[in-house]
Image 1: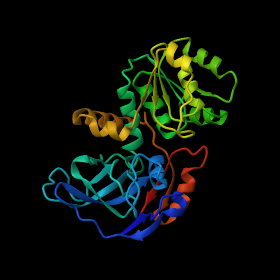
Image 2: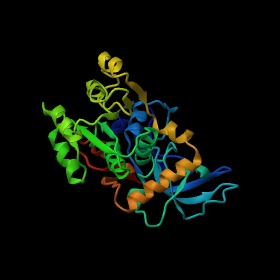
Image 3: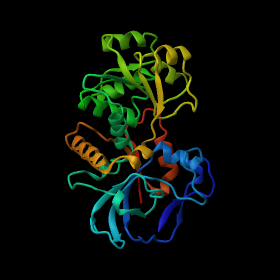
Image 4: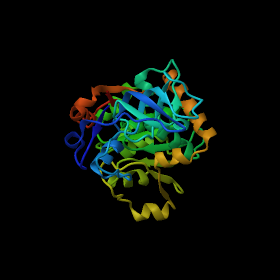
Length: 325
């Protein structure tokens, strides 16, 4: 079969290339699926660069989330059937024509869910809803996040609002405000405007902000922390701009703030099965009623991985870049 392979760590546009791999065979409790679509996530690219928390042995395949059609069943698999659409969010090496995954970790896709939405169901949406679930916020509470025009930021805004939360988003440029407004997302402020703190006070009416989510790092993390109420919590979700946090000690001390991390793959793995199932059902329902939207910026073949990586890094991109065999 064809698969994307890299023999060294580095720029994904340069080190990834299509190569031949043996067709994998499912073992007991596993299934083989024919890949239909797979999104490009930042953590996939960081893994290829060798800068993520997981570093595979070389030569290595890539990609972690995919929509596929069950092609073969291993011994003991009874809950899935050949020809059924399934998604996985934690199977390494799915940027290939076929992949093998544990049957217990696959999620059957309802017929009404389009391929483009189903392919994105797990990693980003589930991280967003798991994050909200972990925050112990009540209806009417306020949450603030930066990188609001990123994939997870947009989902947190849509899902949080649907759950009755008040979500404020910070973006780095005024154009980001308009991009989100066009998608029906409000309460967004551009921090390149010197009056952004005044705008925040006007939006919240002075209500306490209990939780902040930082996906940027650097001074942007400190900006989020500075807006929180006493006993507020700063959740570090990502580090798009800097691997370090610039936090004012006064904010940490006098607000008696809590700073903690959130790693979606670990949270998902450790989550009780019934809770995980409930959250996926909520996600599917939100997608079907258009409360949650999963736009696609473009679809590229595995052979065009360099173009796909470039498209994924485009500023202002709306939606995920997907790969197909």
